[in-house]
Length: 302
Image (cartoon, rainbow, N blue to C red):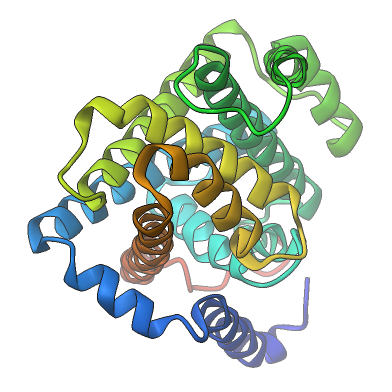
């Protein structure tokens, strides 16, 4: 854990980097953002933001459950503040910043960094695996035109399903964390339920952002977003999947919406998700400060 004397400066650097790279992700596209926002109703934008916030909250609940599974059961407010503030690190290129920030904050509650890293990697694994299941299922059922052969979607689907088996998750967690991970069949079902809420919320948000609120395309929009999200996570050098995620989302949605509307929707989705990330981080950080997250732990407890 860094020397506490340097923590305020490190936090400023961290937040500065988050803002800089979030701006970089939209650099040169602010006119497009304005045009896209102007063509979307205020009610649609507000509804989409609320849905994305709900989806994000479900992911925060999942992260806390995974922390408990590795022996680090954080209080609700402190845990969600740790998760959402740390999640801002995904806007910095590389996959380590979110987990590193979460490990630093959780360390104030005497949580070993290795436990937080283990929970963070399992969290990413569930995210990618469920995204692949949603996306490839939509492709195989013909909801979207597939950009690759069907056999590849089948392989991805089988691999993603196998990766979520409790025995596989326990083994992976033990190898990373060096300790047993308490994940059983019931935990897996709860995880799948939470991720279903997340992907359904994101899909419904896309409907509210798309021209004409195309509810019949809910499944297709959700499948496209899930696949694009998974690719964005895998491309670790792109901050929050900038470029890779948006390009695949546009590619998948163009046959459905046309290239102009698909591009505008991808851009609006990024703006709404960025705003939701910022709101969740700010809201839970304020709540945690009020509840005492920033008070130092007793000496020798960390």
